[in-house]
Image (cartoon, rainbow, N blue to C red; front, side, top):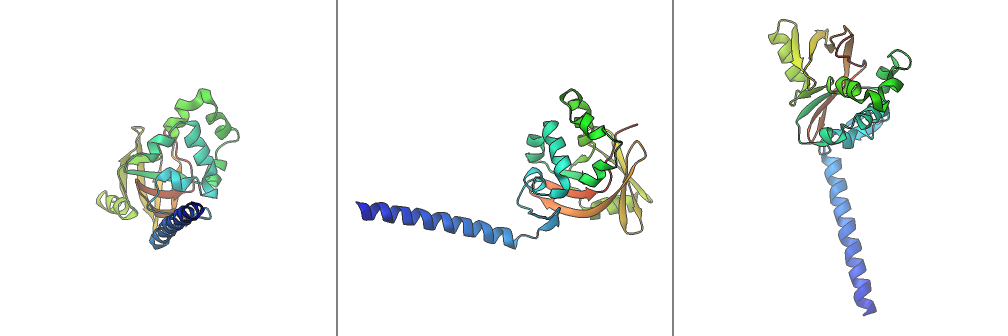
Length: 191
């Protein structure tokens, strides 16, 4: 009886180790991109990847406060223009703290959904739309307002309704439910 228990435990250990090893090998074969000191895996969804980026802790906290985690874990596809912590720090003092208050949840949701497009728009799709639009392309965000994309040399720039312009600093961070483009400025729906 003891030998059977030992054998069962050994088999379970081997199965668990093998499963973990297969998962690790799969992750190693994926074409991941480093963002905020962490690998972003295409087999993970937007939230599963974003929580690992040390450059996006403010964004993740905001998504949680706005109760948008489940949405961004959904099937999508979504295109997210993801502002870094440094982008949030450019906002006037107290803005982030104010937005994170429960009474400002709707305003926070409006700001965050302004960074999201329904659909999977890779950098080449955005650039092609800019070329087709003779230097500018507008995209309707999930919150209903529009963003304008343009080129500045080889850089893609995104202009918001308030006149702020963000630069895409890391493009095509593929996710299981869309794509993330890292940006250096928070986009605002209006002044």
